[in-house]
Length: 295
Ligand code: GDP
View: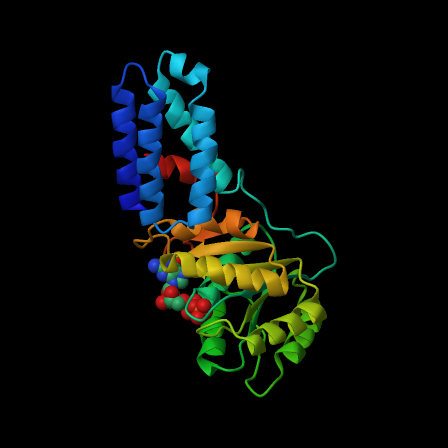
């Protein structure tokens, strides 16, 4: 994960640590390299600009330059700012309110929405909750089948959605059915498209109005970098997301999506997907991620 970015940053820091004393120019030079490393990792340029400005402002102060280990101080500042950039602290799911609580999964086709719905069902099940899986993508029969198979593996009940039904009707019926089955959480796997389009957004808005979800989670593919950020922006404008699940972080994503999404959309990354298996979902911890990046 983020191998190239990590390597670049570690090289910069090694260099900084090597100095007994640091001048303002040493720090500015290091920041130029950090800036390049972030841009090459596909981090949004405005995010990079603010990040570098903020670190530089803190790092060129007298206390840092005069301290015993100035390089170490600068690295500490970068770490703290990185944690902030990633969202500060982890953010839990909002599962209060009327039962069944609704979690709506949205995102582009192929982002990992269906898989993540299964992963989340497993996680909630492990916490003693009773999830009900609802396939609401009526355009691709394979999508309904895929979630139904996952539900079977997990032994979680799944709604018998049909492709000739309206997705809003499916969701309304699913709420009633979840109640009958004693399920307390509805996990709705909505339709995805290859690109954001108005028709899809309108359908998702109708589902949102009908279900009043506690959570609307965007599932975004970390491998798509800045595109994932643009997608998150658009979904957030139309639906007011409550959070993001960033998938495929086990691959060779460069880091741009993870490092830009919170700052660009204001929405926290709540979970990360780290593989295709149903247990490959982790709560996102900004501090751990920052440590992983900085090595
Ligand atoms: P959907 O179209 O958004 O519902 O996407 P799917 O859930 O069908 O996932 C698309 C592909 O991505 C499948 O092959 C999944 O196994 C894979 N996938 C989903 N999440 C992850 C992840 O975190 N890591 C990896 N490596 N693959 C994932």
